[in-house]
Length: 261
Image (cartoon, rainbow, N blue to C red):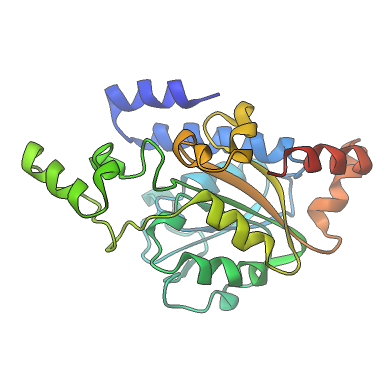
């Protein structure tokens, strides 16, 4: 569980690079516990990379990482790293290539057409490849981002009340660069996608309480951020690497089934 550490850090340091590094390292521990081997030769796409912190943590495992976003905001020391420019609401993602692992962290809620992206996401994966998807669902305590908890008043009224009370600029405006998303609808959509299966699902910042995602309605309010690990059908490098790590594939499948909501 990392939620208490993130809240404490944000109170004193706001969302500095260390704040996002803490998130990335914790997420990578969860991904590895799902049976994903991060090692030299693993080809990764950090999609919606922002400053590139998540991808830079993956590089420490020896992964070959390509960064992609609408604009290049990578940190100065990453200026020469491979970067692809893409607008996920407008561009065809199939031109980005295919990868063993695609990381899409805290991006989905900023897409006007998130299901169009999810419907095409399988094209980014090699057979057996994994998609790590996490996002802040609208009804979570942080669903309105900086104007939370006023988002519970609605996507239009909430920001207006916040503006009148605090009279300071907002980074996010609903239906402009922040869009209501819901865990139940997203899970249902992904389960209808041929060739994809949900391997793991949990509240990102307290994955020990993964059972919350099995409870309709309540999961929308009790999950601060939803994390999913999604696999494309077929044998692949990440799947085959289970045996090399001494993991019994049958045991792994049983563990995965038990947490699929």
